[in-house]
Image (cartoon, rainbow, N blue to C red; front, side, top):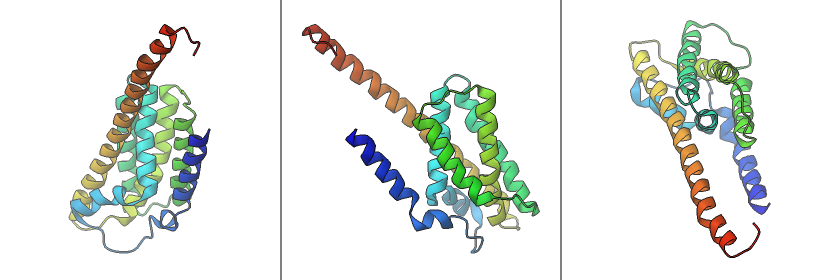
Length: 190
């Protein structure tokens, strides 16, 4: 119980960081692969949402391990194209915040959804994340290189979420096989 309260307090503190609300200020110079790669890694909202996508894919397992993250990356590229083209997408920042909350809740509550619903949900959130990246993308030739950077960083964050899921699953299985048989062999009820 205490661990849950500590985790909840930590999550709440991180969510209330003032910089989380200003992840996409819409100004400044962004260009090149390094800036594109660093952008998803520099915002807490991006890191949390992308790792949650990976964890969500891991929880669903099977084809979702590839389909859910790939859908996010591809649709995020589409959202980026919308941002570059100047197409307005209402509620981008709210959509990004909602992605962190909803995906985090899905992972925390271990919600199992059909693959079609999971891909539709991550696609919706990917539009918002992509649009935010696209509006900050340079209009010159380095824009494509910037896009390659943020797409790669996003895919790596998804992979980190999947790897984290496998590590958690392995630790849980290792802990259950190491502890439960020992207790049962001593005649105690778990």
